[in-house]
Length: 257
Image (cartoon, rainbow, N blue to C red):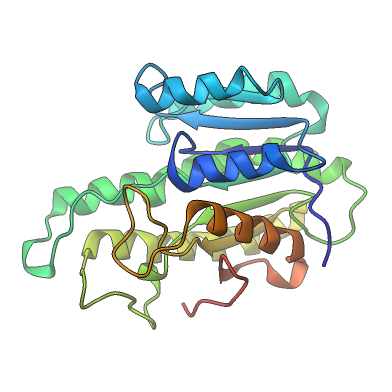
């Protein structure tokens, strides 16, 4: 297995749950990144304040306000990241921010809920990836790594097996139509990114983190945040150019589209 050497990493939606777990795992590494960027929708509320307190203990942790639905917020975050990484660029972008509004069934799904989930889970991820692409390209150009890897430059989209059209996980428990559709669309975005961004040296990947016992997911057999995020870092250590555009779970297994 290859080792994950990440010079800088940004995790969206990282003031709780899987996002915070990923930030914590990077900070705990024996060779932690030079910069870890964690984002919160609201730095003045409980979880945002908690994240800011964590930064007091880690000089390499930079906390940013970020609303992935708002282009001005995204552009401000890019400028702040660029001030830190400078000519080295951003090595790894983990698009973790996502929402599940309510546990709806098909009969009661609404256009409003569908639009809201697409706006965050799919369109928001698209916008963040587009905005940070120049910094990812810079990291790839300056890396001595051959081929594609997460140690060179990568976009990792946190998806869900609820977005697997073949698997249709958990259907008998909850239909959550808008969530499933938004994650299926996110997976297509990953595939498109893998085809377009490969030429720039940027790997793209979708990852299902397991059904982690958080505020958003605990319907199925729960996985702890620590186990999930430790597994994700292990997967990121092992992926190579042949894996770009793949849909994997936190244990490295391929999830069917």
